Amino acid sequence: MKHVMRWVAPLLLALPLGIACSSTDPENDPAEPTDDESRLRNEIFEENASGKADNADCSGVVLPDQSGFNKRVAITFDDGPHLDNTPRVLDVLAAHHATATFFINGKGVRTAQHRDLLKRMHEAGHIIGNHSQNHANLKTVSAATLKAEIEGTHQILLDVGVKPAFFRFPYGSSSCATAETVRSYGYAVTGWHIDSADWCFAASRGGVGYCDPATFQHVPNSYRSDIAGFVLSQARAKGGGVLLFHDVHAYTVGVLDSILTKLENDGFRFVGLDDVDTFPRLNGKKPASSPFIGSACEDHDDCNFTAVNEAGFCQTYEGGGFCSISCNGTCPDKAGMAPTFCVSLDGNSGQCVAKSSAANGYCADLPGTTAKPMSRFIGTSSAPASTADVCVP
Image 1 (cartoon, rainbow, N blue to C red):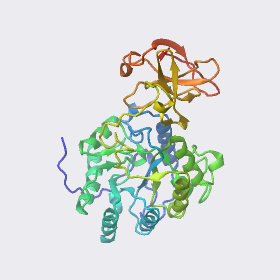
Image 2: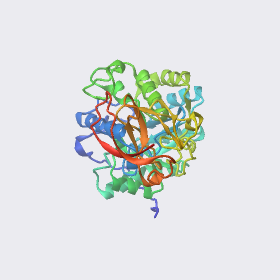
Image 3: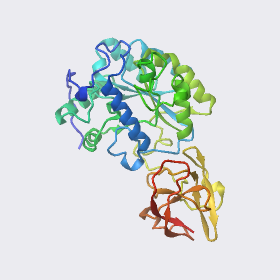
Image 4: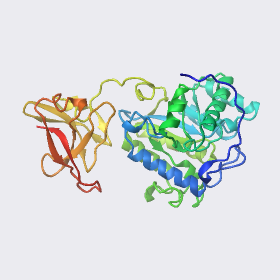
């Protein structure tokens, strides 16, 4: 049941877990993240990296669409609007003929100028989403506070002519209960696939342009001073997806053009969050049938997909064939498909196969296969030893 919306005045909420807003003045570049804020961002990155589509219903960061992006990227920005930085971001986006989604905090919409900026963003074709009123860790607040955090920003957007459809939890921090509450308002909970970590490059202990490992652990050392390289490496690994920035950082504005240029030069193109072909599940649609690990096939053309940077191929055998990719310890899953497992069919290398499950009729949908227990191919990975019933010839 949808809630009846009403104006809720901005609240000055004390943030839990010792996490404070980065700046008392939203128009200033945020200060260095607190230790608690860094810890939470590290935890959320790990949740996203290890998360699969089957736990997206409770997560604020794991998206239901996990593959099939075909080098398409949705650009998103959190924490604005910012009277100085956001207009400059709009200019960069226009130069790249790109639209983006801006997840705003209601507390930052304080003047007629802010409301006019929101209208300009909307009229330019950008999507504006709800990022809560005060940027609290909504996983830990009371039900009443959660309601106020959602409704305050929702009403601001309605007042400037926007009908918001996407909600992003601050820090990506959610629980099953908070995600269910957000969805009861008609929102799609929207995480991300590619974390630019611009908040770390902009304001970490190492200085502007350097992401200190003490602030954020998950940037490889080779990219500690190379945000564009870090973003491109993630985009390549995932084939595209939702990209996270923050338009409150002047640093982000300064590097945005070079990052988008690198992506374009590598063959990526920009789409909106509402692009149903790229993000069908996020938009409440059933995805078009597409091949994946465990799909029946006759030749390699039937397995025209890429997952975790590996090209699909058809493993043929007497009586049939199934799509697969090479693996080293683990394999990706896809919502609606049988879960996958990394095994060795030749005794030397790893290959992803489908587990026996209801999604493939317990192997009956793959002619010529039966369910057999097999050990995980670990290879050079750190994956733990395991066994599973998989569909193999």
